[in-house]
Structure formats: C-alpha cells, structure tokens
Length: 417
Image 1 (tube, rainbow, N blue to C red):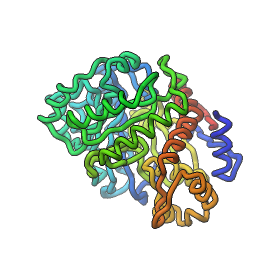
Image 2 (cartoon, rainbow, N blue to C red):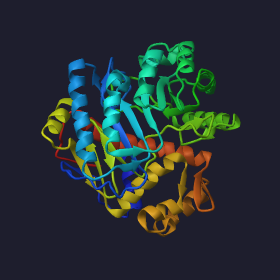
Image 3 (spheres, rainbow, N blue to C red):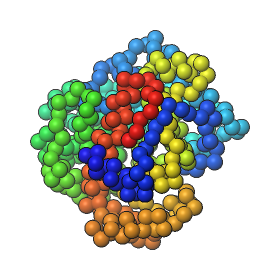
C-alpha cells in the first residue's frame, strides 16, 4: 500500500524526497494575499465516541469545553489581527466532534471571526442526529449558521448496529427541519459497509431527500488502524460496482454532482470544507493550507489550550512545500470536485498545467479516467472510482500514520510520509 503511494509521490513530484513534517511553525501566517481562502473551526467534544470515527474528539466536559472555547476565540484573534482590515473569505465550517455541544458559544465564536474576516458563501456546521431538534436548530440559525450537515451514516438499523450508533428517526428529522429551514441541509452516509447493497444505499438517499435534505454525501468506509472498529472494508470490485450504481442513480434522478461523494437536488445546495485553494484552521487538530506550507494543530486538547494561553500558535507540525509538492496537493483536493480547470491552475501557480503534467493528463485520457472540454478536465465514472481508490491508499498510508502518531504525541519532532 505505502509502496504505491510512495511511487506515485516520487513520480508526480519528480523527486525521491518524502513529505517531511517538522515540529516548527510561523507565528505570523502569510494569508493576506491568498485567494479563495476558507476557514475551519474544530470543536472536539462528543457525548460518546463512535468506534469507527478517526477524527480528533474527547468526551464532553463542560468545564473543559468552556476553557477550550476561550482559547479558540483567542486563537482566532491572534491570527486574524495579524493584518489591518478584514480579509474576504469564502466560507466558515465547524466540524468535530459534535459542534452543537458548544451551540451556546457559537454566536461569540462567529462574532470573533467577523471582526477579522468577511464571509461570502455562508457558515456550515456538522450535526449529530440527536441534535436535530427545534431548540438547537433555532440557536444555530440565530448564531448565523446557514448550512448544516447531519451525520446519519445510515437510516437502517442493521448498519447503525454495526457502527455502534442509535436508530435515527426520519420523521423527527423532517418535523424539525420543516420548522427551522437552512440554505443547505446535507446528510452524510457511509458506503461500502459489509454486505451493503445498492438497494440499501438507494433507500437511504431517497429517505434523506424526502425528509428535508437538499444535499447528500456518500463517504466510503475506511478502516483506520487506530480506531477500535472491527468493521472490514468491502472488496474492490464490489465497492466499484456499488459506487457506479449509486452515482448513476443520482445522475438519473437529476441530482447535481458537486464532488466525488456528494449530490444535491438543487445547484445552490453545497457543503464542502475541503475544496478550497487555501484555508485557515482553528482549534485542536485543525489544519491550515497556504501557498507554501501546510500545518496541523496539536490533537491534545489540554496542550492546545496551554499553547494558546501562552500566546503561541498551537501548531504541532509543518511541511514547507516544494513547488511540485504544492501542485500535487492542489490537484489532489481540487480533483475532489471531479473537475480541474487549467486556467485556475495557471492563475494559482503562474505555470501552464500541461507544461507540468501534460503526460499524466494524456495517460488519464487514454485510460478513460478523464475527459477534456474547453480547458476543463472532468472525471469519468471510472476516473472517479480510481480517485476514490487512490484516496483510500493515501489515507491509510499518510493520514492514518500521521493521525495515529499525533493522537499519542502532542508535538512530535518529525514525521516523514
């Protein structure tokens, strides 16, 4: 697995040099000239821990949550005040954890953000199904949330049981969402669970759109080595067939494909914190991507609070990109939207895409992975599957290793990937 990703990395970066993350960071972040800049805020608290979830989270404790939010607001001011005036950003997303556990603080957090940034495309927040009730939704709306993403995983008891989750009541969701509407209501599902069929997944999507969703995300199950889940991944051929079937079904229904895994019933409904050229991350485990660097905050909640209270950024690791490394990162996450525009690439790097990766694009077209029209490269169904397949390798070879180490060490000295 790591052999494939390493070989691909060496070919695409034209170097044997690995991705090297070091225990260093810049206190001053050069984001002022970044275009298409997004914001992300991580709230790590959960009432219970799902055994399949790889993200940074801890059991909710009100005292610790209060302390964390104070540090989070301080971090926002530390970074935001580095430049005079307000920086225009595309969006703000809250992830977790279960951000709704800090619903009473959201207004204060967003007020702090608004002191330094102008958000042009709305504010999104992830929700646990238990939090989809009129009281919580009204609190979110009053705070300024315009988009919500509900982590359903599956409406079917057999899969909720496999994942260690409770049954989700579709009618209760529908009632709450009818009372408190949002610009985007997304619902997340996991595909490629053991013995999952096309009919299973189709049923989940149909229910989602019938109870108030205008956007769905269908994420593949990934078996991280550091989680306690005993669920095994679906075999490759079966997974590809399922992904192709459900993609074709959504397209036949007239749903708009926003990315590899997401579909919406109306074009305006979008939910993605990933497809940004650059972004600033706040909170423990949050990542920041700028023109020449990528950094990740410590996963340790108490160490995060301590660093911020000492008026230092809570960065645990930083990679300084070579030009080719930054290009690969750009292409990998831009391709998540299923499209890459050569004009956007040249605008970002000042170099034509074909000059850097003309051979690779020719090969991808030859094998039927992409199509080109008016300078826009679009993935075919085959290309989308192999993107997913490689992303799975990338996740298990790189992210799994990094997150596994960072869950144990607040500030590791160095990681090579």
